[in-house]
Figure 1 (cartoon, rainbow, N blue to C red):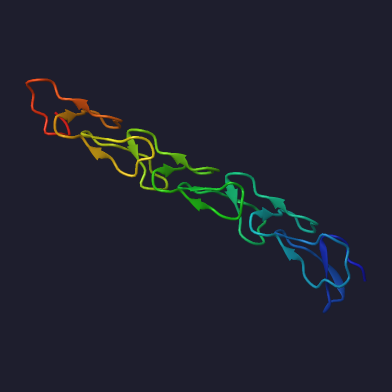
Figure 2 (cartoon, rainbow, N blue to C red):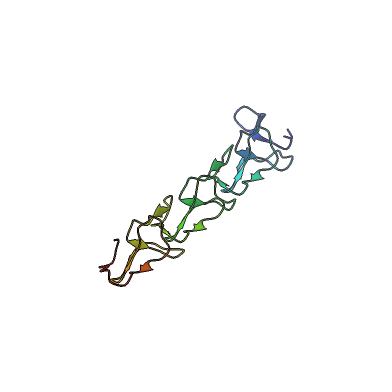
Length: 161
């Protein structure tokens, strides 16, 4: 018996069986006794299929999946089998295909959070932590990318005034 694409031959029942979602069979056959699973980074939502689709950017999948999952925040998914964690100094939102550099005035310990620097602290871009203002400098705002010089005749121990 010859099975068509998207089917495999069940020897016990001596009949062709449709491949399930997440599986495929690319050719007519009579000897294959199971469908092939979609590889990581690929998916197939329909039964009786002859191929698998590649996951788009911002999504990922493991083996034999009917759908790709949306990339969680704190990870990037360039359209592959893996979700890649964001490095320290970078962050991402849900469905991201790339991790984004932490902006000045914020720190990113790695992952989902882009946290503004507290009053008396500052940061440049890609910062993993905020830096305290040095003595003789200050800032009074959260999310600062620099500290200001202390006015003459004022004492600034660092941090804020």
